Image: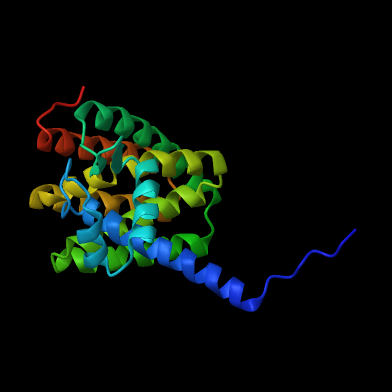
Length: 231
């Protein structure tokens, strides 16, 4: 049996650089969409975006295709790509499922998280609070999402985590949108403080209820912003 060729160091480096470039462009384009700088149904002009992001069209096209798989972009035959619209009925469906998944994850995390895990989540919470105090929504939202992600991971259920990631990708814009109301943003922070307290006390039933209510409250704000009503 012939020996398997060993990749040259330069090839490995090149592959790593391409992967890093892809992830960077995806993150930058995702932020523009999630934070509303690229509004729903905006046509994605490759030349303009490539200049704005300081990249070439090839990694940009790859990023657009990737974000289409997350539901943030729609690919239109022979017409390029647009930012996907936020459809109230779709948001309704996804938030209901997310609420159930996060509630289950909260219960499991109270059982399975280590003390180090809980300390890490508390640290993320303190960073999030600092950005809220300064009115910095974009970095606040990044820490907010990391907290939800860590609770999901601490549940110790790979199937649940995979389902959550797929669902959450479709509503990141909506979750960000829900915090544009100052009153709702303040209320969300209070809900997070209660969630951290329940997790610290390992009160699974309490955290389960808090997470379900947290998602339900976000849905109300999202539906109001989109001109619909939660069912």
